[in-house]
Length: 200
Length: 200
Image 1 (tube, rainbow over the protein chains, first blue to last red):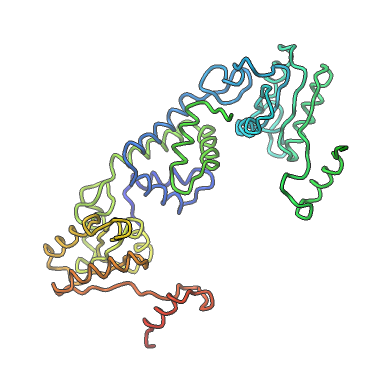
Image 2: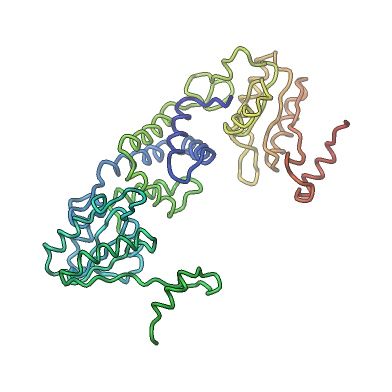
């Protein structure tokens, strides 16, 4: 019996299609948008269209960019001998936020997962291998794939392919997150923390 | 140090302007939108623009509509002798979902709140009073303002203005929500439930 005008219904169902947004939240957002200043709402719509229109993959590292080659790849000050391999563009942001890493990136856009039918051909792995062949200055790749079953499998798979060429393959340390108690750390993490312990 | 392409940044900041959406969620939504099929993303943008373009207030009841007069006001089968006064368009939906009410509505778009500087002039109250004068068939108004301090004050204010004209002013019952335990009901609610008890 709930009757919205059809354009409200359309807005709600479009919003409800976004991840983590149910019908209730979509309703709330729709009414908020309807109450917004018109300019701001049109800005939002425009931002969606612009992003879809302009954003593409960097020709070098496959990160999202609005240029042919992304800013990080163009940055002359970055260390061109190291490539950090990540699963998604948001991982690049996470790495950048640490301010610890000054090398380049390669974004795979996924992980190999036979269960979900994702093969090495489905992620941007071939691009990485070609890049490693073409750029002799690359001395190391840091496999920063997620610490999941798929991420680990992908990292191992890449390491197996790359190692014969003499490029160093490293993997991010696995262990207890900063600020955690031993008591609440799961046994796999704790096992890895013991295995990877550092001599002080 | 986190560098997104500027159109991604713009999309994230626009999304983060919505209520209940922080930077992290805005990032997640933005990346989801970037991965969406282009048609779907453009549908979303279009839905925002259409809603802003087409939706306006019903000339009779001030509910949101894409016509001059909303569907509820046009519906010949509804009881034109009762008007339910609510604070917002989403309250209309909530009332409609009960399937208990077959009268008309009036949407105030707010509540009187001296603390926030919202006066009777700032809500659609004058429209209601004019409507009551013009339509002699109206016998009762149900004040379904929220059960908040502002909502109660607004309901009492309206009742004071309307009562002299002989129109019945009623208020939704206040009490224990269905499915609740007495133990977890706050004392104000419980007090009202006692006050408003019904003889069986």
